[in-house]
Length: 168
Image (tube, rainbow, N blue to C red; front, side, top):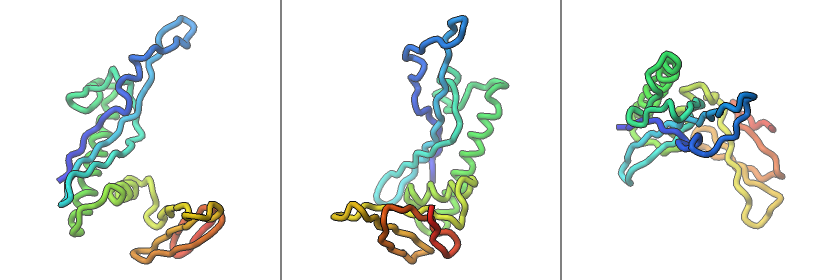
C-alpha cells in the first residue's frame, strides 16, 4: 500500500522580504514547486519517494490540511492534475507490486517517469561513476534487462537506446 500526498518545496517563500518590482511598488508573490511524496514500506522498513510534479503555486493559495490548492476556479485544473498524478502513482505502485517485489525509490521513480511520458521506455540513462584512482576515466554502466555492460572511457556521456550505445 502506498500513501501519496503533496507538499510545497518552500512554504516560506513569501514570508521573506520581496523587493517590489512593479511601477506601483506592489508586492510580487513568488510561486513554489509542488512535490509529490509517496510513502510505502517493505520488509526492511519505510521508504519514501520525493517526486517533482512540475507544478507551482503561490504558498498563500495552498491548503496544508487538504494538501491541495484552494478550491477556486483558478486552481480547479491544478487540483485535477494533482488528482491524476496521485492516481498514476498508485496505479504504477500496484503494477510494480504485482510483479512480486516492493520497488526501490529509484525503480518507482523510473516507472513513474515512463508512465507519465517523461522518459521513453526504450531509453535508459546510464549511470556514471568516477574510477577510484584515475580521474581521467569514467566507468559507464549500461544495462539491457539484467545484463550489465561496463565500459571504460574518457569523460564522455552515453545513452543506451534500443540495443546500441549512443554518444551525447
